[in-house]
Length: 92
Image 1 (tube, rainbow, N blue to C red):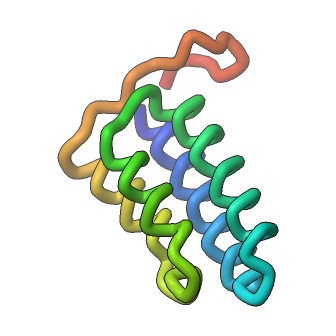
Image 2 (image 1 turned 90 degrees about the vertical axis):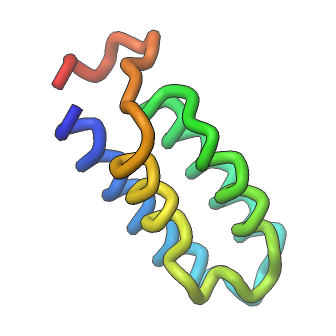
């Protein structure tokens, strides 16, 4: 579980940094956020906080705020990390 959360936090941090750099190109920012949501669903399993996170990130100007890191923090605090059906990540 800790390994999955660490991977999720790394994905979220990289995405927030990339979104900040792509703030002036909304289609690129939306693509980054879509890929981030898919990766987080793959790592964390189905988590409801990821959906509002994706919607908020689609709002122009929000990229200046590290919202994906907060979403992963919410999952860590209130959610349960569920194993994905993908066998590329060992349990942990």
